[in-house]
Amino acid sequence: MLILVFFLLLLSATYSIYSNAFLTDYLPVIILFCSGLVRFLRHIILASFHVFEFGLHAFGLSIKAFSFLKRRAKRRTGLAVQPCENGDVYEGELRRGRFHGTGVYYYNTGGMYEGEWIDSKFDGHGVQTWTDGSKYKGHFKKGLSHGFGIYQDHAGVLYAGEWVNGQSHGYGMQTYEDGSCYVGQYKCGLKHGSGHFQFRNGGTHGGEYFAGKMHGFGVYRYSNGQRYEGAWCEGNRKGLGMCSSTYGEPQSGLWDDEFLEISSFAVNNTRVLDAVQTNQLLLFHSQAARTAAEKAYNIPRVDDMVNRAVVAAENAANAAAIASSMAIQMEQRDRWVEHDLPMQMV
Image (cartoon, rainbow, N blue to C red; front, side, top):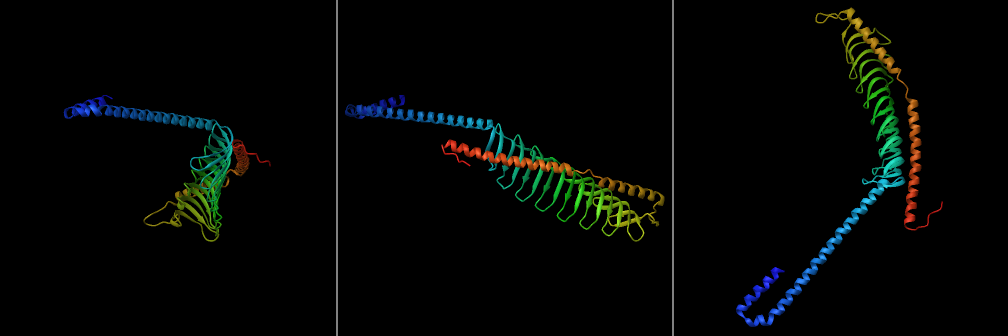
């Protein structure tokens, strides 16, 4: 306003120098025009302020509404159909907005899980299937297979036994697509400990395993009747051992894979083996191999525990399917009530 008054004074002083008649005739008109312009600008500023204030108010209401809906979703308990942000869908029981109880979870990639939930994680018994056809039935803990269960992949490989944190760990049995079968101990998903392996060609190995390979002492019976008792290293005969067959003399000594590197009866100028000491070591290694083989054959059976876990998983899956169906019916009923539609009678 002060700037406008100063501008008018400057204008009047300028024109007073050149023409007194101009000031007398047009100065009132100029003053009225400037006054109207000031009022117009004032109304525009006030209107803009009101619009801005209304926008802030509406934004605040939207935030409050979103917070209310979020709190309501967190407090939601019962049966419901709840879509997830990544495109997955859950149908089943809720507790305070979390998946809790029995329910079915559909992945947007095509897989699904049916079973028990605790705090939005697989926990209890259930059945999980993947898009490639792989399936796991058994016990879960905090979203991972844990306990007893059966897993079968799309290629036909099947494992039944103990699980820890999503990996085979403990005692179990695994069959392969070529017909081979292993029964024994596992650690972190690999054969580790005592075990017995039945090969496709009819051969068998009973003994110690390390990180998925024959390692330690063991007895290998070949399909042609040959038998090796002794030390193994990373899947190969390595160390002292004895190999016998249905025909011919048994061979004993220091082995390197399939070859007898030094016979226990060999004596030459470069390397001489003490026959007595070597025979004692061979007897010790052979006895250790037989003990490991017997321990491998006496693996505790986990069939009953696995079967009970599978039955419980299937029951949980059926309960989850029922909860899913009821959740869908309740969702449809809520929509009918919301839109005042007549409910369908079955």
